[in-house]
Image (tube, rainbow, N blue to C red; front, top):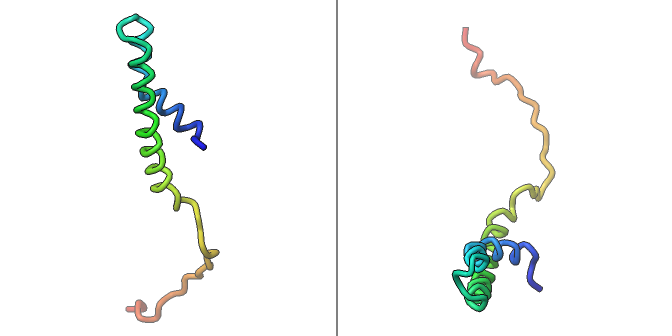
Length: 77
């Protein structure tokens, strides 16, 4: 199943072609071909982004609090 974010990003990538279609500079088939080319490119780019950011915010173990204590070797008169 394709994600909505991929389709929206592909629409954003192919927006210049859609803009040119509105002003009747290119044909509808060319707009659709550009959108279909943009879908796998958007899927790859967003999958890479998800892979890079997958580990952020996850903690495997709960952190143990450490109480700082004065070191005896630092006591110099």
